[in-house]
Length: 317
Image 1 (cartoon, one colour):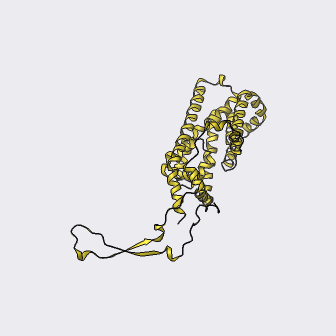
Image 2 (cartoon, one colour):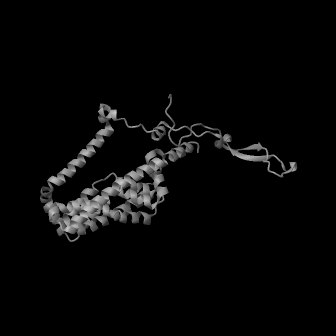
Image 3 (cartoon, one colour):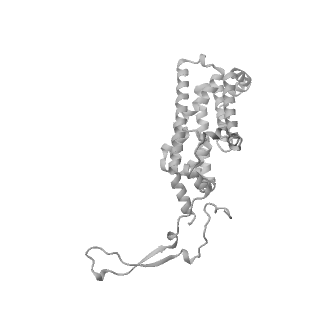
């Protein structure tokens, strides 16, 4: 190609102003059974010139999204598959997650002893429980992260019972504030992302079509809450619907609270009820996360052709 493909939203052909106006086309009147010859008159029909134009071809990005490259097992044995920026980032994240899990499994008692002075000080404060709530509210805004670490520390300081309610308060307040900020201050940026990012546009369409069910599933899925909250705020989801989805997805936070609580109370010393509750919560949450991710991924692939067709038509608007 001599010139780059026109960006999304740009006009491909500069048409004169007169060409975009309605034209009068002389068409014969339709014939119906029983009509007399005197009833047959010429009919003037208004036709928009843009309706006669062909829908533009998909861009290379759109074509690649519609026709993804099939996985070839032979690529696993090539340097290009492993030594690229995208794969190296994935491997780094996986390695950090494994290291994090092993650290908390092997050195949980040492971690608890190291954090003991801080946890004792926070627990002794009259309104110490407001500290993690404030931190979680701040961490609700991208690109900040660390919500899970705060949740683990809350479980370490206050245990499963009080810790869960503290985490619930921080999560609800932080997500609601983030939702309102995105809705009223970032609407232009989100609309721009929907026009330029195919994956974001597909996700937004899935949310609009699915409503509350999709919102709840996404809250349980592996999609980061920073990203999903931004989508919800600009897709017509009401504040009440979003709040209900947050409340119903709070059990997902129990995993990290349990993890923090077991740092000072080993699993062998937990009561039978706490042991059962911990295992059930972990299994249900992991299952919901996997099922939610698969469902959302399938729905985005379903709406992909429709989204790309709308993008192609929009180039002439």
